[in-house]
Structures are given as structure tokens and as C-alpha cells.
Image (cartoon, rainbow, N blue to C red; front, side, top):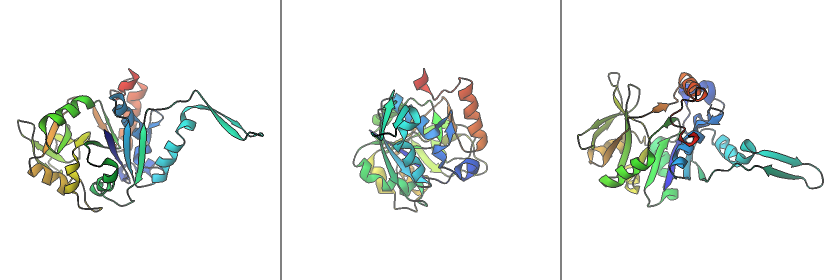
Length: 259
């Protein structure tokens, strides 16, 4: 099953870093947060990724193209052979497709553009700026069990994200953008989607978290997987520092692969 990661936004709230590179490439623990997210999914056996690139997309492509150089010892022979030898090759069991989904394309438009790479299969979907200790296997089991089009991981926290209204049976009856009085249960990403979701997206100007998700919810096709564990979005420089501190202290719940 493919994992689609939204990694094309401008990251304006963390412009101290994002003016140089895309937000998902900002490092925590000396690795891009995108790498951390991919390691989470890989830990549960999901190793095929489709990355929705946009702003400074060449930075993401070049990083993956040079992955061996970043993570292995290398000998360059500039003599007659003019060759490069990689030692202690550090590789991941990943297949990564990097798609330029446009500079100014909205989230829904980015998802629509990767439809050819997903086809008619169920797929995972998340954002490239948040880490969590979500049990991906249980999330997928929950999704398969209810038979709806979409599952969205919900966490209880007072932040600035789209708000979910959840019925007792777990069905999301309404999804709406936040307002100043909101707090509580929010969209944490870590979603599972059926290909029917593409029918709700019109084009590049479509914001996924508005009309598409609102309509899926009103059709009774959006379910909430309620996560009680750790979740953290790297929205600001302060968030980045907090994640760095957690890694330095050996208290990073999302890094399951380290245990």
C-alpha cells in the first residue's frame, strides 16, 4: 500500500528555515522531519511512498538522489578509475516517487495530481510536518473494518487545525475549518483513503480540508480513528526546538524504530 505525503507547501510559519528548503526537509535530530515520518510508516511495513512536492521541490529530489552520500562512508578515486565506492552501504527498504505537484497548488490539487501513481488502490495520506506514535496497523484495521471512503486520525489538543464532530459510533458527522473559539479534537493527518476520494476533488485550487472533506463528512463517509498517544506538528521554530529537545533527551515517542 502506498503512503502519500504532502510536502509542497511554503511553510511560512517557520520561515526562519523554510526560506532555504521545504518545510518537510527541516531537520530534527540531524534528519529531515520527512525522513522521520517515512521511518514511522516503514516500521509498520509500509515502504512505498509518493511525495507531493512543490516549493523548492529540487531540494527533496536531490536529497533522495544523494541518500547514499548522506548516510554512508565513501571513497572517491580521482585517478585512472575516476570512480566512487560506497562503504557500509546504509539503505532503506523504500521505493520513493517524487512528484512535482506545482508551486501554488492547494492540498486537494496535490492529491488529485498523484492519482495516476495511486490508481484504484487504498492509500495512506499524511502531512510532511508532523510526527506521532500512531499504530499504523491498527489504523488500517479500523479503516478496513468500517468500509467508508476515508479515515482521519483525530487527537485531542487545543491548536489551530480543522475541527471534527464525532458521533458515538466513530462517524465524523462534520468537518469544518477552525475559528477562534475552537479547541479539542483536531485532524492529525495519518489518514487512510479509498480511491473514491478523488471524485470529491475538482482541481489545483481545491483545498482538501475544505469542500472535499466537508462533503465526505456530510455523505457519512468520513470516520475518526481516535489516537490517545503522542502527536506533534512542527509548525514553528519553537515546535522544532521542542522536538529537538525530546530527541536529545531520548524521549521521542515517534521514533519506534530506535527501540
